[in-house]
Amino acid sequence: MAQSSQRPCGKPGCAKLVRGKRFCAAHTRETRSGSYAQRAGVPRADWEAVRRSVLAANPFCAACLQRGEHTASCVVDHIRPHKGDLALFFDSANLEALCKRFHDRKTVNDDGGFGR
Image 1 (tube, rainbow, N blue to C red):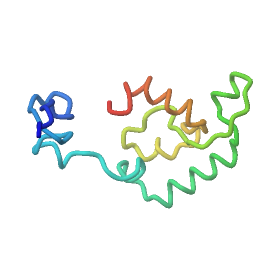
Image 2 (cartoon, rainbow, N blue to C red; image 1 turned 180 degrees about the horizontal axis):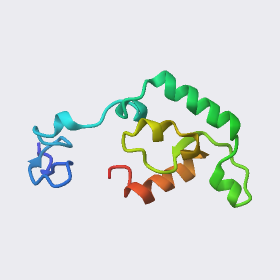
Image 3 (cartoon, rainbow, N blue to C red; image 1 turned 90 degrees about the vertical axis):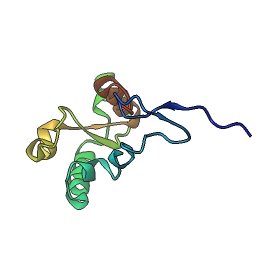
Image 4 (cartoon, one colour; image 1 turned 30 degrees about the vertical axis):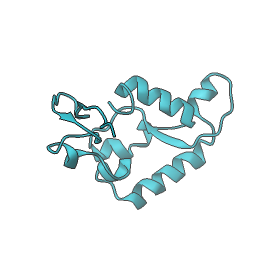
């Protein structure tokens, strides 16, 4: 039976080759796990309360409304990246309700894709 070919480690800048895995042994433990809020160090209940209030106050996607469309919002997005700053994380002026389509598009444009 043929073995899978080797490919570079998924960690940017790492040149080690791996077979059948995404990361080399040195970077396996660094993979992200947990929800976005958990990775930011925010208690889940706190973020869920904020998320629910933003979605209740803004039932339609902000980006779609600018285009004259009425699409239900389902994602709360940070307008400016908070980068671990909890004051900015919970700042209501920095939050907007978006539909999944526009949130995904914004993530790709701002972060360079989902895998960064």
